[in-house]
Length: 176
Ligand code: FES
Image (cartoon, rainbow, N blue to C red; front, side):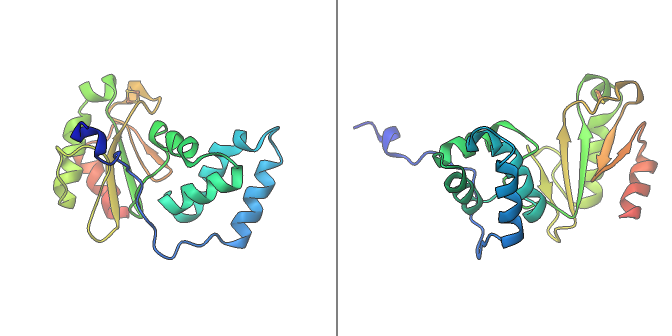
């Protein structure tokens, strides 16, 4: 047999020790499901509710969701790997998202991202979200934030910032 066929399938899910679904969240999920003709159709809304509570979605949360919606876990996992807003790892308290689509890339997004990484001791060349060791900040690139004329554009949690200079970036960090 080919050795490649015996290797485990890469799985980006992380375990969450002590995972327990709070009864209030389960009640919220049950209510969400009533809005859809079939349970599976509620998948994204259920995942958003779980992420809102825990901050990310673990292997246990995927298994719980699959059981609740009566689908195989792969049907939940495929959503997690498709939608970048669904988090497969714990995020920092302050989530810095720098737009890197064309206008922002030309307007200094890569320099801005590098500046944040240098200030926070992160590797500007690493792919995907990076979180500081103290769990305070996560820095990542995102795609167009729909304000292309005001590049470079970024968000810190729900706050939106346009035309962000390094000085402005430092002020944003200071405000956290
Ligand atoms: S390209 Fe950055 S907001 Fe559109």
